[in-house]
Amino acid sequence: MEKRAQAAMEFLMTYGWAILAAIIAIGVLAYFGVFSPSNLVSDQYNLASPFSVIAGSLNTTDLTLDIRNGRGETVTIKTISVPGCNTTNSFTTQIADGDHQVFTIACNPALNSGDILRADVTVTFNTTSSSVDQTTGGTIVARVR
Image (tube, rainbow, N blue to C red; front, side, top):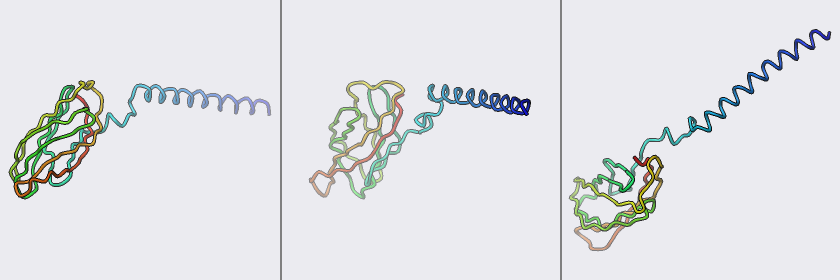
């Protein structure tokens, strides 16, 4: 009976060491960021109607957005505010219906390369048919390159 008990105990100890080694390996991988979902997320640049972002890029000093107008009439972009860049940039750029324009928004202070910017964007604009300022929003999730 004692031999069977000793064999069972050795069996459990062997599996115990194997499980402990697996837990340590998973812990090391998690510590070094292998399981970090931020490594798997692609850059996302979204604006609400009437605009859409064709392309975007983010580096340490500025954010560049290629914005398309889907309003049905010419709009004038007045400001683009990006709190994650701690800035509001003023513009007087007109975009005809269906056209697009590239906007560069300065980030001050400079961002750190490799960080991820998560920010709500606010665009203030008016149309050719009305001088009343209108706003629309959007979100940006992008890695600083």
